Length: 283
Image 1 (cartoon, rainbow, N blue to C red):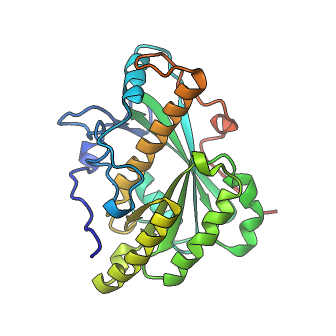
Image 2 (tube, one colour; image 1 turned 180 degrees about the vertical axis):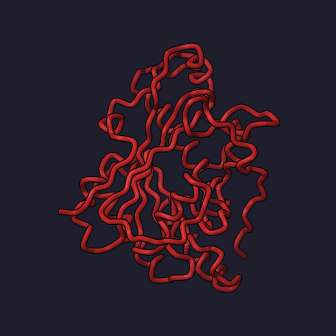
């Protein structure tokens, strides 16, 4: 039996954009905010059988560092997220549903790479996700090594109505991991087009998806870009976990291992200097 998606109350009416920016607040509990002090509430994994983390909230050192940083000068902390998978599995629609809150019926295959930036406040600290939407066509794989490198998270997307796209997910992941350190990358396996699958078909393919996600140590999610089901919670989950990983990494680098130590939550990689949106074609 495949676990049902945990019920949540998160929707757009609960989102509080940061002043002067397009983005979302992930803050402390409150009637007008999404609760982010507990990752297992709105931001828990779709399936408890395939969860990277089962803890109840952010790491104490992360919360302590962010509490101090609210009164200090803080620059944007950035996480690079690459989205890979077969052509037409819904990678672009998944990102578009999250960023625009709408389903784009006019599908156009991604040529090369599309790039989007989404801004958040997590525990009061500015944070951004760079979403790299890569082409699924074979002829554009020549650009993969350039854009896969330096990812903090890899989202492998497959079509819940296509068994072959799930089978191909392994190769997409292997290609992406060639350019990244396995010990420092968060993995997510996402099944799209949930609305097109019958309950029987969904149950069958999800069993295989969960087995695969457990094997590769990825979180598994099933979503629908058309209806929006699960999309918002999924990206908040990605933001929460990548933010926590980045802060813990900065704490380790600075040697500040005690709660309350001040660190600058900045990212010195080339990703900081990337434009807010760009496209690239394979040469």
